[in-house]
Length: 396
Ligand code: SF4
Image (cartoon, rainbow, N blue to C red):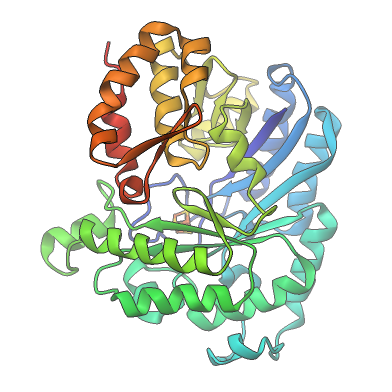
């Protein structure tokens, strides 16, 4: 079982918090689509086994037309062995799918279909025809204040209209939301959650706003233009999110991910389980079970190298300790936790004994618990899972 990740390195504008790789110039878009197709062919021998998931991430994949997406998907199908029913996800921004006059938030409650341009319906239909069967929509917030602070390209009404329309074509939809935004009160965050739940979407991905180095957000906070991001506020938001989604029947199957039973992201789950994946496009990462690779995060160099039949990739072989640390980190973030049995079998007794010693304090403080043979974070420990994981890391 393997996955393919395709990075589309273009965005309309830079969100203030973002440190992903993208260019706001679309002038090389045709060349990029061709180069991605070529990279898929050049790396054919790297992926063994059937492809179960294909994921268009970015950047902003919804800047591409359905025929450009279809061209890439056709190359995947003609080059790799793809299972009969792959999960094919596309990250989409509301403003790429909709353009319409203001509509009201009350539309959420009665699920009415709002007046809309035919354009969006055609685009959604065309994506579906191209082979996309899961949409991940980057809403981030339903409030203008938050969207402006983050410099998102859409407004709240576009997010709502886009979701209502998307539901006519796609069952498998996920929304991205961000909490811990400066000036975001508990009430406003709760209202965001309620709007998302009211839209009857099977999957939510919710992330705490983080201040990445060299982003506009970092600069604004340093200059006092934007208040700092508070960790304890984010923790309160996360707790509220867990309580409210649980009540609504969603399973918090990974720290940031919530789904109705059976609607978990197959792509993300395979990633957390350490399954191999091939990442194509500028800045895309790959993993073959032993080696990690990352493509150059520069569109011009990427295009030039691919044109010369060179792979723009750097690779490193993970040591046993690297793999142990990664497993502990991702395991603690998931519902399954970290298997002590797996630690013994895959990494050996030295790692098992080290883990058991290191986790004792967290067991005593009720941040971790052991269920059968797996170590998991408690409700109290959930928000602290990354810090707890780092206490369990082995440093060579
Ligand atoms: S749309 Fe996504 S990738 Fe592009 S700048 Fe915003 S957050 Fe970053």
